Length: 126
Ligand SMILES: [Zn+2]
Image 1 (tube, protein in one colour):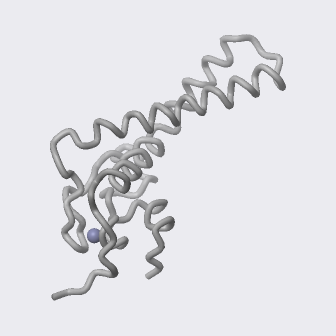
Image 2 (cartoon, protein in one colour; image 1 turned 90 degrees about the vertical axis):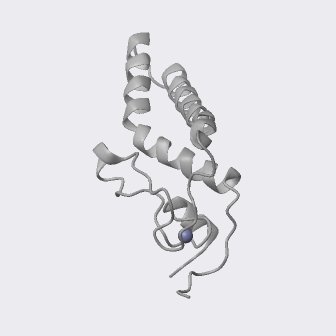
């Protein structure tokens, strides 16, 4: 199994073994996008170091949504001559539509950056 940092992060794998999934269901099951494993199903590393750990990941989601607003704002201002309300509707639709993705990526990044889990190599049964 390819265990590169970038690939494990993008695929939502455990930071400690880079094999176990952080989330229970694939992103295609949108209705259950937020269900996380409490521990890595492969190596047993805990995915919630303390209660409320993922509160800070909201800042990453916020930054992502600000980026969406800025990009759409620039496109509307310089390239499309549409009424202002279409900008607002577009931003709301994009923010809601990308929420499962931004929710997951912000939690994954938060866990990788601040979760205190370090790569221990491929998991071996002992
Ligand atoms: Zn693991």
